[in-house]
Image (cartoon, rainbow, N blue to C red; front, side, top):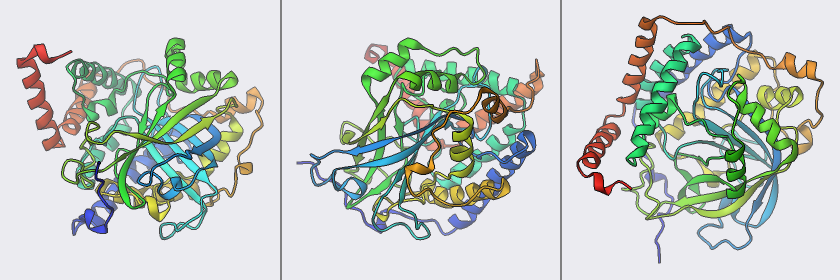
Length: 424
């Protein structure tokens, strides 16, 4: 019988200077937010800025869970109303034709009872997930080094970002061909998949009641096959949004919610978010179903409510699902501070919805929709090679910042090249 690691506070090890590190992360990301605020005329999210679907649905908790999975929110079978926001990861409103980035899935579960984290007094539970099983930095300190390069790149033209995105995507595809992957390259050049065609992960550990886990939301296989067959028209600067609107006009979508329980704190560390927990030792196991019916997936009214007013934050959590580890401790503070700064700057209320009735349903006129979809500054037709080289250098610096992870990546690459017969 498999043995699972019990949650204790001692699983976390907080460095003495972590508060200063998190302060510096908030300051660096805040500077990037000021750049985009001047560009767009309003404060956008410093992470996951451009949404491509704003949805409502239900979370169905399974009724046949064994004791180790029947924990926290999933302790009892039931149905919860949810608000879902799907978006690109960067804190910019990027052109989908030019730049391909990782995607995010943010879920606000409503009507959740139980002890909450300090400072959270609403009956909501937020889950903030991204494509990719690991985070692209092991700790908050490593992320601070990375975010400095990323925020510097914020002010550069989209034509430059397009060149870097393409180069990163091609390079990582070559690594994928020999069974490897770089989370850092994926950040700059994600595969051009439909948002409903890939899974989303917590990437970092969370408390799971009596245990410790990572979460994954896996798309229904039939839906995944259908959206991949349909494809995306990348001649549209809002191609991902257009694809989601087209899909949900007539179709539903479902995700299987799964949990990967920690079985060994050494091979499945809490404090290093760049380590992929081996699924052969502890597979992801189903605990619930996220059901999203046909609906207007994005419109001006939903944009005003979800994009502008809501905050999806790891600190909006049951105590039973406390985020764990260095990266999550940084998120607990940074998301709250920067999200409330965005809402206050834009004159939005700082409150959580009490039920799903707060989310608008109506579809606005075409004129209202067009006026709400603000675009960024015009993209230059060309950019100098010097600027391309500068951003490429930033990408290179970011790629090598996690020395332990990337050294291991190079070693595995060399080993696979020496033994090509092992590659399927």
